[in-house]
Structure formats: structure tokens, C-alpha cells
Amino acid sequence: MIRTGLANLPLHRGKAPPWLVAKMLELGKAIFSVMVLEYGEEEILRRFSDPFWFQCLSCILGYDWHSSGTTTVTLGVLKSFLNPAEHGLAVVGGKGSISRRAPDEIEKIAASLNLSEVNVKRLKRVSRLTAKVDNAAIQDGFQLYHHSMIISRKNWAVIQQGMDKINLYARRYHWFSKHAVNLVAEPHTGIISDVIRSQVLDMSAKESEQCRKTSLDLVKDNPIHLKKIFNSLRNAAQTALTDFLISPPKIQILNMPSRIDWDALNQAYEIQPNCYEDLLLVKGVGPGAVRALALISQLIWGASPSWKDPAKFSFAHGGKDGVPYPVNRSLMEKSANLLKNIVEEAKINKKDKLNMLKRLSDFIKPVGEE
Image (tube, rainbow, N blue to C red):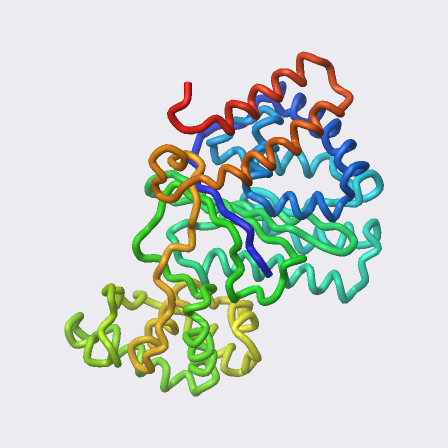
């Protein structure tokens, strides 16, 4: 699996007004009627996995492009009108408690998309696993609160969002099935964030491969041994912990979680998971267990995970000063031009077309340009 991007967006409280949602529905239907004819549902799915294209889409539909509502409102609107009969697509999941309904909603749309029982089971697994990866395998300080899955007869895309409750910024994650190789190994192809953090545990990184293997080996051993190691490391002084290292780390991230779910690790031991994906899917294996296993792997066996934030691009601060990284303007403009052509062909009135194109133009305007 390749994750194609994430975006950092500030929290704007409140709800989208009914008049705006109604207008977004009207414009969205017009846009997607053209897209299905011109590109087909599989290409639309690929576009959903592109954070630049999704941001452009949200912009032309009329929502504030730099708000966290870009994700929740836009996907909520899309869910209300995308359907298998007309578009070959369906959206499941959503914000808050609705996100947890995704597996049940996959069951409900199975017949309309002609999905086999095997495919339904696979999609449910993907839904759970993508959430586990972004919530536990990548520990960037953003707690997931939105999970949407866009499904066709053959492929799928996942868009989900997490919130940092301290600074009230959101981070958005994109996934696409056609690039699937391994759901827990190098899943990102493009990452967009306003906040780059110096210390992020990323168990999905290529550099974490040996740490993933060691973590898996640890849970296959008797949990009594693992608990003994965990307690000895957690209770040790910071300076004493370095004695366990084969080589000193470049950054000191040696704090063990205060607690982990030992019942979950006991269950993992009984299951004997075949791969790291299976380990993540064990109920109760969350950020604490993932972090503890990663730190033990690093401190005892020298199998270091990646501590680098996987974010690579920025919407808000790229362009002129390139902080934290430059905006990929060619990708952004390519996405914008495609949507411009679609808007021109959509059967909507001239005023709506002009407003949509103006919003799109404002979005791709270089930083500092008046």
C-alpha cells in the first residue's frame, strides 16, 4: 500500500451552514458527472489519493481550503451523493463515531458493487489496518477522528484525519490500493504538513524494517520475558538505559510508555501473528505497545526504528521560504488544471463557474503574491 499524502490543517469550530452544504452538493454532482464520463471511477480513486487534487476539489466546492473542515465536510458531501449505480463509487465511514461504522457500511454496499465475500473481508481488514497504522505505527501526536473509505468494484482509497488536541491542528492521511505492496512498509509517496516534528516514531518507514521484525519476534516469545524486560527498562535511569545500546542514538528518545495492554500482548502470543500487519490488528495493541516493542528492539537488540517525521510538503509555508519543505507546485498546478477543465465542462451556471475558478486560482497562488 502506498499512502500518497497528508495535510496539516487548523481546527475551525462549528458546522458548515446548510446553504453551503446544499451548494456543495449541487456543484459536486455536476463535477463528478463529468469526471465519471471523462476518466472513469478508477482514475477518480487515484485522484482522491492525491492530497493536492483533493485540496483543489475542496476549494472549488466552496469550503475554506486551509481548515480541518476541508476533509470532514467535503467527504460528508461526497458520501451523500456518490453511488455505485451512477458513479461506480461509494463512500463509507466519516467523522467521529461514524468512522467506526465503516465495516458495517462495507457490508451494506457489497451487493451494489458486486463485491465477493473475500473482497468484503479484505476491505474490512484494510479499513482497520489503515487506521491502526496512522494511529499507532506512526506516532506523530495526531489522534484519528475521521476515517473515510472510497470504494469501487476493484480498488479503494482511504482518507483519514487526526487532531493534535494541544495546538488544534489536523493532519490528513491518504491511501490508494493500486500502489499496494505492503500496508506497513513505506506507505507514503507524498506527505503535506504545516508542522514538521523532530521526534516521530514511524514504524512504517523503510528504516524500521528490522525493528518491525524484532517486535514481531518479541511478541512470539513468552510475555513473561517481555514484561520483565519492559519493567527493567522503564524503571532504569535515563543514563543507565544507554548501557543497553549497541551504539549511542543520535537523538535521545528513551522514555518507555507508562503502561501497555498486557492482555493484548498475551493474546498476540497465543495468536502468533505471521506478520507486523497481523500484530497491529490484535485488539488492544495500540501506541503504547507499539512504542514499547520498538524501544526494546532498539535498546536490547539494536534494531532501531525511524524517528523522522514522514511529512514532506507544506501548503501554507512552501513556495517563497520553503518552510518546512517547498510546495510541489507542478503537482498542484496539474491538479488545478484538470479541475479547471472539468468545471468548464460541468453543466452549471456561469456565475458558479467563475466563483469556482476564482477559488481555485486563489489556492494555487504563490506565497507572498498579491
